[in-house]
Image 1 (cartoon, rainbow, N blue to C red):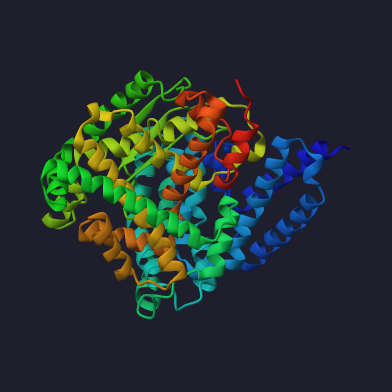
Image 2: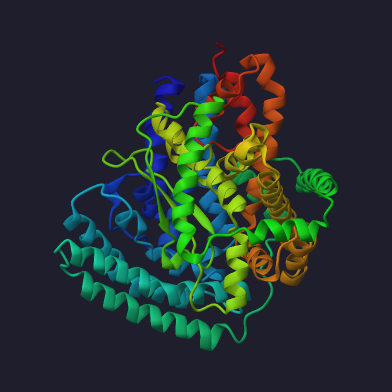
Length: 541
């Protein structure tokens, strides 16, 4: 048996092993044989999983990279990270001992509700199974979480837990509308009762003794960069590159300010004031989706594989605490549904009038247009259309690099301005720069919070001072960095793609942006550290 032939069954074993721990991820990729499955998160089960991953890594190590074709050498590396990444979560980050969101986050039903991929009765049955698993999962959480827990983790888990019942109500309404309620109503009651108890336990016992000790620390942060992105560059260099990008974006904004003869705060306030009313947000986003698709075609920025269809919906209740807008694409293995869903978070009616106005100002029209570029065209939805259009290896269909995905989407914001979005209007570039400053600050906040012992207040002040954010969204961003250090991905990925563009655009793609972008998107969403290698392997034309 040759090395390439030897890698194929091992590739399948590694992916199957990953899905034992992460069946919801398999469902999101479109593998519906995993519908309704929940993992066993007990200490014994996860240790057995980790030991199995160790054995698979040992076998993978015996397949010599040099004996494989170049593209399979890439796949071998990706397979390594598919195992080392969850091992990092279990053994280094201790997610199941430190983060209650690891448990309350197990009950998303969006994959079953979002698109009509199969018969409603089967989807309702799968949702009922997920809900019925809640008592066992949350009981494991109570026994396994070791307080004192990080305060931001507890607060967000409580917030998500409080919002999940409305998400479960959406599932029951879905079942009722289709006349297949089955056991879903009873399952919902079981899940909500156990969730109430878990959230009450967090509030009463864990919240009073929670601490600000959330940081990974420098060594684990370095390892995170490798297992997620295949990057071994010191994080200090990444921090310096992010600081340089921050200064470049601030300098360009200063140029616009001088041209406009306004103070920065006045210019940004004028842009923010141009926001839709609460009831207009979704309709505005839908219009921008159509405009962005036409813009990509008109400017010949990239190929848009067909079929291409994207609808706009309100963000599900359970995601409102952590999401401004997001894209739910069809998975690469999805066979019955190809529609993307662009979620936008609307004003929360429980907020004060001041908070509601701040939120709408952050979703002003130029900003919402920029967000649409990021989430839909030529950002995430176009990216996933290409993923589905190419015949990729199993490893590349399964692996998702956040720095590649978010880096591409963030890069396209700058690309759109370069191509003359909104007729080259000043406000469009101001919105793009405002978001670029936000992403620069995310990178700096991530490194500061997790390697330099920054407080949440220090990170909040960074977003206010350097990115001109108002208090509410600045604090949300800072809190997000405590539990999601990987939000460095936006700037890290963008800078990697810009570097590759400088290196390859003229020399390999004859200056054609469409050819370069199609090549970037042809390899799936690999670790961003492999981008140059993949472009080197891409056939010249």
